[in-house]
Image 1 (cartoon, rainbow, N blue to C red):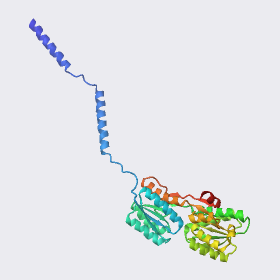
Image 2 (cartoon, one colour):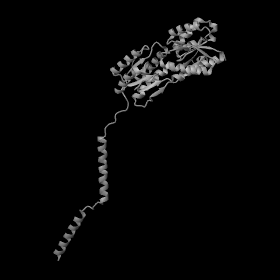
Image 3 (cartoon, helix red, strand yellow):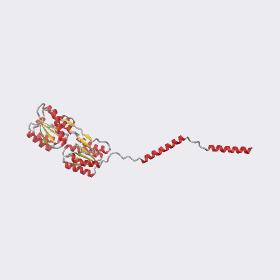
Image 4 (cartoon, one colour):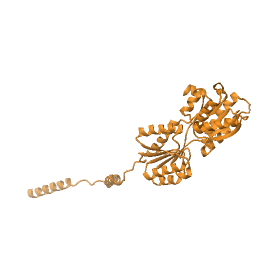
Length: 345
């Protein structure tokens, strides 16, 4: 009997030990959740490892070719000063060339820039069709092409002046002076400027429209070609000889207007300067000084020339940074008279 009981106890102990060693089965739902979490982590790591790195947006910008229409014109002198200051601050290299107002020369300059592989080109457009092939090639090679004043096909963007409205500013200022000094009189007017340059022709359309609307009794008696002070002086001497009663000369820009004014100073007595009016545009230093000293030059239009230069460079920097640049960016301007010059210049 004792032997039987001992055997029973041993068997009972073995059964208890075997039961304790068995792990409780984990619910199927919990197992599935853990497996899905591990799989998700593995998938995330795999996606991060195979995902390619994003290339930085933008373009390289270091070397810039610049073709200036005519470096002897005071407007472009100041524009270049603005460009150079902005370029120096940004660490850009400017290769500035003078096209000397010659379309063939400018075309060669731009072709050379493209062949040199510059990063960007800035052009004060003389002949848009002549530059079109170079602009197209620049586009193919990823070179930024900034046209100024006149649009060029395939240019990256154009920094434009509203030529007609610029002319309106010139004509409006002249009409206001005429109404104050010669109300309702049949005043003879001469127009002097670059009649061989399409933007100036458009500008003169604005001059005529605004002046004759504001001063209907005005009479335009002659239109003369001039593009700098020297030719402006010659034009005024010829005008005065043929039209000795002329009292007003409206110019498309300040360079010829300065020459016209200097000629008038030698043709009429100083005491009579107040009877004459020369209007220009661009607000170059010589024009401001002539207005300030009480010469026959009475007004100009401020195109913020230095700002034109700095903005031209900033547009290139925006392009290089991958920012969106409008295809047409417009220059600002404001007409200024003697009172404005005395108070602000």
